[in-house]
Length: 234
Length: 364
Image 1 (cartoon, each protein chain N blue to C red):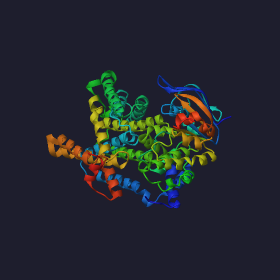
Image 2: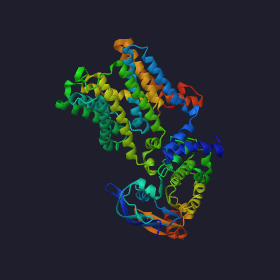
Image 3: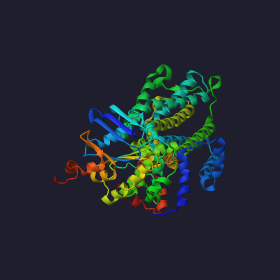
Image 4: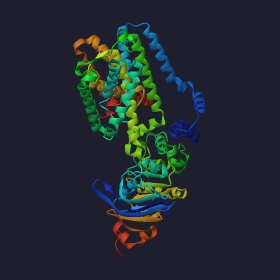
C-alpha cells in the first residue's frame, strides 16, 4: 500500500474543472516529482490533497484512510504538511514564531531538528520573516511544514524566484528529509532539477497525468527532453 | 545580524514553545510553575496594573462626583477599545459595527430589569450571553468576508439591529426609549450612584485588560495573529481559522455587551439611537488605531488619551471642540500611522526618534 494514493480524482474551482481523472501514488520515504507547464493543474492537485479545495469525485487515501473532503486540520493531524506556492510565511512574525506556528496543531515546540536541517535559520530565529532572503524564506517555509512532523510534505514551486545556486542548495536537503521519514511530493516547473532529485515522477498536462515512471527514465526520454527541456531532437 | 549561541536560542524558545504547545499539566504544576517563573522583570506589568487600580481607588476619595463620572467614561472606553482590538487588532478583522453588542447588552439589561424586574446581577450576565450568541450568529456568515466587505457588513448589521429594536415597541419601548426602575420598591437592584459606577467601570476596564493580556499570550493568541498575518498560511498549518475568528469576535462582543449593560444601568433612561450610536464604533476604531493596534498597551493609551482629550476640549473650547478634536486626530494619524505606542516601541528599539523618518517610512 502506498503512503498516498489518488484514484480518478476530479477537482477544480467553481464551475471550472481543472483536474481530470488524475491517479497518482507516493511511496513512503521517497521524493516524488510532479512536473508540468504553467496552468497544468499542479498547484490545484496539491491543494486538493491538503484539503484546501474540495474534490468532485475520485478518492485520495493517505496511510489507507480516505481524506478527500476532510477538514484541513484533520489532514494536518494525519501527517500531511503543505508548503504553499510563494512561501506564504507569516511575514510580520519572527522566524522562531513561524516555525512554532508550524507546530501549532501538533503542539510541537522542538525546533532543533529543522534548525539542524537548515542551520542558517538558527542564526535568524529572532529576525522578522519578511527580511529574510528568498532562499532563507523558502527554507523557513519548508522548516515550518516539517514542524508538524509529517509523513508527507507537499512543496509547491520550490524554485520560484530563487537563484539556481540557492535552488540546488535547498533541493540537496530533500533526500535527507525523505530518508528521515517524510516523503516529499515536489511540484516544480524546473523539470531538470525535479527529475534529478526525485525517484519517481508524474507529468501533468492540462489537468491530466500523461506520463509517469522512474525519474531517470523520464529524464532520458527524448519527448520529455524536447517538450520541457528545450533540447533539439536527435 | 546577531549570531546567537545554541544556549540562548533554546532558552528563549522554551517559553514561547510552551505556550504554543499548551502542554497538558495538572493544576498544581501550573501554579508551581507560575510562581517559580515570577521575577521582577516579568511581573512588573501585573504589579503596575495592581498599583494603578489601587491608586485610582484611592483617587476616588479625593475627587468630586462629576470627575468620577468623567473617569467612568474613560474606563468604559478602555474596555471598548480592548474589545475592538481583539477582533480588529489581533485577528485583523476591522469591525465597523461593534456598537451592535453595546446596544444589545444595554437593551437586554433594560428589558429584563424593566419588564421582568430581574436583578442587574442576573441581567448583566444575560447581556453578555446575548452578546456571545449574537456574535456567533452574525460572525459565522460575516467573518467569511474580508477587508472592506467585512467592515460594510458589520456596519449594516449594527444599523439593522437598531431598527429591529426600534420597531419592537411592545418589548423595548421602541423610539420612545426605555427606563430602568431605580426608585423604591420598584427597583430590582439599588442604583449604584456615581461612586458605584466608578468602581464598576474600573473593574470592567481592568478585566478587559487582563483578558486581552491572557489572550495575547496564549496559544489561541498566536492563532489570532497567524490569521491576521496570512489566513491561507494559517489554515495550511492546521489552524481552524473559522473557529479562531468566531471565538475572537465572541470574546470581543461579550466585553462590549458587558459595557453596554453597565452603561444602560448608569443612564437609567435611553433610546435606540443612544446605545446603537455608530460614533461608539468609530471611537473604538480611532482609539485602537491611534494608540497602536495588536498590543494591549496601545488601545489602553489610545482610550485614556483620546477620552481625556475629548472631555478637556468639550469643557474648555465650547462650540468648536469637535472640530479641534478631529484636527488633532488627523495630525496624530499623519505623524504616527502605526500608532503612538508602536512608534515609541520601535523608536526605542532602534534608538531613533525622528518623526520625519516615520512619515517617510509610511510614505505619507
